[in-house]
Amino acid sequence: GQQVMQIPQYQHVQEGEDFTTYCNSSTTLSNIQWYKQRPGGHPVFLIQLVKSGEVKKQKRLTFQFGEAKKNSSLHITATQTTDVGTYFCAGDSNSGYALNFGKGTSLLVTP
Amino acid sequence: KAGVTQTPRYLIKTRGQQVTLSCSPISGHRSVSWYQQTPGQGLQFLFEYFSETQRNKGNFPGRFSGRQFSNSRSEMNVSTLELGDSALYLCASSGGSGQRNTIYFGEGSWLTVV
Image (cartoon, rainbow over all chains, first blue to last red; front, side, top):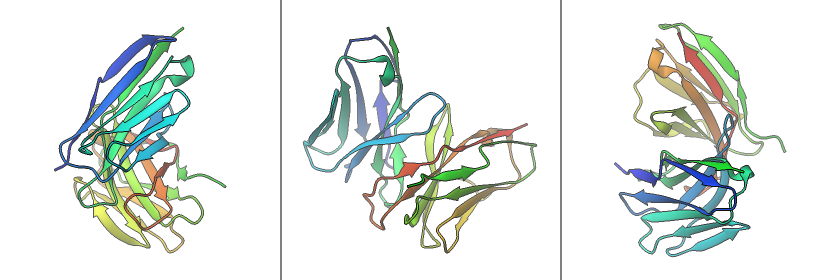
């Protein structure tokens, strides 16, 4: 079945440094979604990418969807302590109506 | 507009018991899905319901079941609890019938099996 893999598993940065997490799928995705989960919280939707090669920005966050629609990345410029949390990517399963989540990248930002 | 509401938030059960978790979706949302989150396995899809029909089911044993009511509220049940069932159970709702709709998670139900 479809597998969604994320790297790195953990990332520790100093405040102000950039951060990138990568997501790769074993199959072509119809779309990819990104979620953020703060410690002790629940996943919160960030963005959905649908088109091949799509790039979307949300303030300091830049999301990309690969040309082959099998990979994606999330880049945070000049991290802040408020960026701490686990970032998950998720793709549609083959049968639809369900999301296959990557295992997430846990980001720690120290001031 | 109220978000996804899950009850109970925390519960402790003994091995062999059964548990029922409840989820009220965002008003107007007709799709409800359930996920299990554990440190080792991450977020794993359990099942999804739309208009009282289960449309998709994840790779979990038959001890895990669910249902959806006519008002879109959903419940999931786990019978004969095992220690490995300890997890955060997340409910998510979505507004439409299509495959590309964003899902909105509730705060989850923390289940500890002892």
